[in-house]
View 1: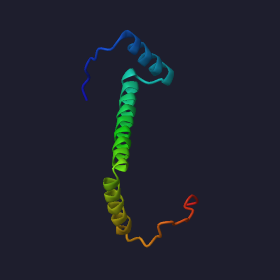
View 2 (view 1 turned 90 degrees about the horizontal axis):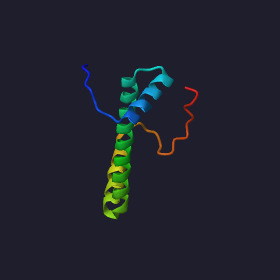
View 3 (view 1 turned 180 degrees about the vertical axis):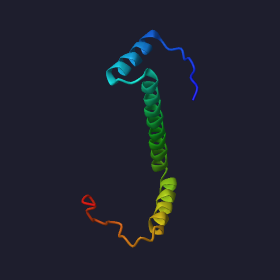
View 4 (view 1 turned 180 degrees about the horizontal axis):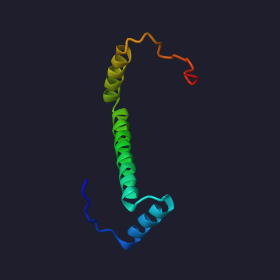
Amino acid sequence: MGTVTVRVSADTRDRIAALARESGRPMSAVIDEAMRDYEHKRFFGDLNRQIAATRADPEAWADHQAEAAVFDKAAGDGLSDLDDTDYSAW
């Protein structure tokens, strides 16, 4: 994978450098991790907003619940909805 130059403020560069130094990793690794974290945060933020919007619309929420019920039964695994088996020892 190639590299490119990105302009950032001196303060941002210093903060990235400090994090890299503290973690013993290259600055590029710190930036890569920050981007993954930011994308993750945005994805789940968007998802939560979409779920809230669906819940705020009674008809849309009812449609969602009905569709989810179909998929809950589609597994065909024979487990009850409230399976209380403790799998932590497996």
